[in-house]
Length: 73
Image (cartoon, rainbow, N blue to C red; front, side):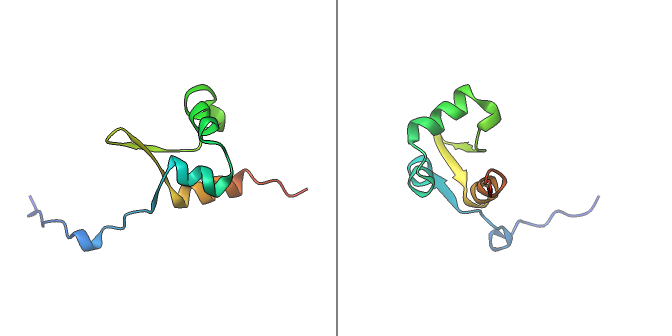
């Protein structure tokens, strides 16, 4: 079995994480709407992560989600 090397923390790319309030400010989507989407409307849910009880959104995922849900008419 190959020897395991310790993980070098400098080699890990940690995505920029945004709070619910930051996402609300950036998108102009009310915090309450973000909360409703998480609990009531899974098809509209913006992907999120729960860390230590806090809801966080990855900035790269938010930007991709906005692009997917943008209509150019």
